Image (cartoon, rainbow, N blue to C red; front, side, top):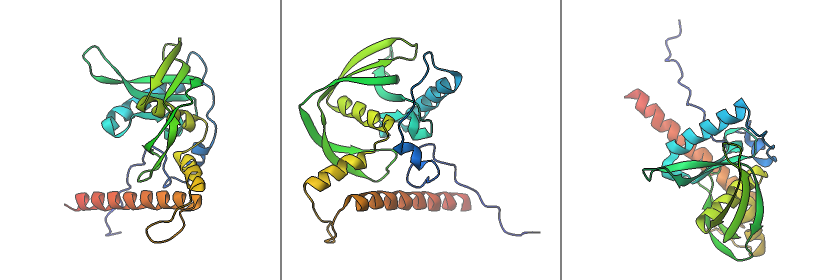
Length: 214
């Protein structure tokens, strides 16, 4: 008879991060077009994304299906309101960029799939998007400022691009060094993001272990 206490496994993070090497390659792939109307699996994906965004609340402005392991061209944004003025999520299915402004703005940006990492780089100030809504109707919408950046961020996910790629371009334009005097190369940017994610996971595991021991 084993006297050791049974091990309690931490629940799997629904969002793919560097600490999830099995699913990580999905984030570097092109997502596939959805059928219209959506099939049962795609409808289920939208429901799961909606629940997750509601759970994250102000921690996230949007979420792409591929971030939860479903490589379909779907993303949600927390940019709607219901009759009572409560924030709700809008679904964008098979989105296509119609136009992007030449005028850009450089500001900070983070990603749920790269916890602990953020970078500053330019995005268009205005974008126009054509997409299918959840009812299967074709829609067009113009986004400005923060929401234009959010749309470009999610479109990048559907095309297999992470924000670290944009940061790499900025690094290559103007090489700089870390506070330790080490060259901040594109490879090191990814390594730093991965290490931060691992440390965050370790802290969460310790916190979980302390809670169990109480």
